[in-house]
Length: 531
Image (tube, rainbow, N blue to C red; front, side):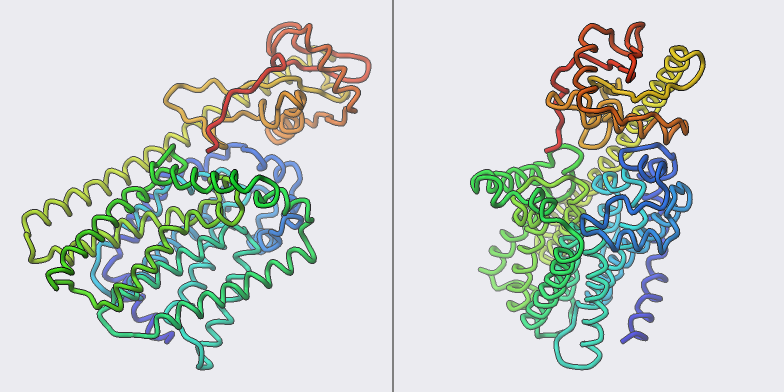
């Protein structure tokens, strides 16, 4: 088995070495600046200010993420090393995933560039890269899960070799789930992709139902082991309860969340949900209509048994991006939508290839032009995704430079208020300020939101204090005290009512027991487009 896979891998590299290079080039274009620019982003300041910290990951069930960070030697914030490792793991994972499709399909000649380029340019990865403190670790966990899915594909119960593969896949899956819980849907999507690839192979393998059941049982056992370990030793019930909508929200609200997610995915609402997924679903319907038309003429080029299992696999792949929302009953953050790039990219390649097989020799003129239009649309989507990635990179750059400028102004004001020395009193920031972004920048979910407005709310008008102090320390090394009491915070809010907005004169007030900085009046923050 191992020798056969290695031979197939060498064959794949020899045939598609240009695709390996193109995928790395696409990654560098889309994410190179985001990864290597060194901008301080939300949560990254915690690692900079507290090197070696587990960052609270153990308390939320991500103990393997902390272990991978230790294993990779990334206990401190190392921009270059972390970036190189991220690109290495992400590139290996993307190409191993593509090779898995190639190998499981019987080394069939196909347009693998469609899958690979749609996958690696997906905007979803920007939201993982935003958290540069964990980008390499998450990319490694994804690589391990791809290997686990590869081991489980084409396998059935019985032989010692299969049992060993199952155990190895279980260990890798356990590590992946312990690194980032949302990777469960990523693993499911990758398994479905490999299963669908097997069904396109010309060889007759059989045992498809047994394989499906074996993979479901394997995932269920590993997930239950992970959940038991997590709930018993690591995660508090308060954290888990706060993540679940079912039981906390009305059932109707949870159902609406699932339907809203489906709408966003199908319509490609915003850069966070933009992918080939919606187009892929439309093409899937076109393929279904073409199959029905050819079936009446008894002209289908595929076995009926494989068609049935393909329909089952495709239904699972289409539903994969909805699984996490359905499980939680909550709208999930974009960085957790791991299944979307896999589903969208594979639908793009799979459906166009099946349409080509179906239309081969039948009305060649119409079929040729329709396929050409499909592939041009795919190229357009790749270009649009790349443009969105670069747009988010520029947005983050402008936001970070403005935060740095505000910080320099703040320290100059503090120095002037204290005879040239940094103040030693607790600091309280009242209100919020946002980055002044050009219209073409994108203020979405994490991107574009300033440290000087993070965690602020009408109910907590001093909420931005912790993030601002963290950014000041990470950027300049100056430590601002943020240990004001609740009474001091309430008094600071009252005093801020008569002050000017920072950086105007009269925006910083030194009292006997704290320093008050008014960023703005207490008002509603600008709306976000989280969903």
